[in-house]
Length: 159
Image 1 (spheres, rainbow, N blue to C red):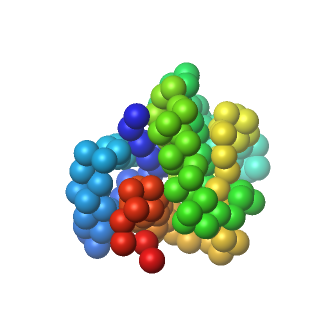
Image 2 (cartoon, helix red, strand yellow; image 1 turned 120 degrees about the horizontal axis):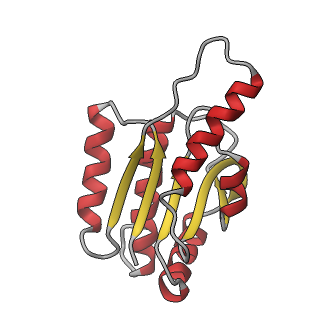
């Protein structure tokens, strides 16, 4: 099994790239992490609700094209389930033990995720009700994936 992180938009800030690279390096061969960046749809300043939904659907189609049959899909959503690090570790472990595909985490674009992505998801995770920049959320999620692996291996990283 591999863990994939499918994200909409390109990471720009060097300090975030460096932080993510550090956790990816630490994970090494435990459970390899692949990050897939998808181009975000350009949103016109005066986009109607209908246009925004069409853009969200196009982004959703791009996301779903990266999900394979058998993959376990966890999406980040404000209204999702609040989880502790231990609960996330348990989810990762079950996907590793019982899964038939990869474990895929998704961070959508600024418009959110399409209804089709929600319907395909196996788990909706919330990191709280606060709005965080999507780029920063990548670093937080990658750290939590690393932490989950450390918990599952009994490491002292998680105290």
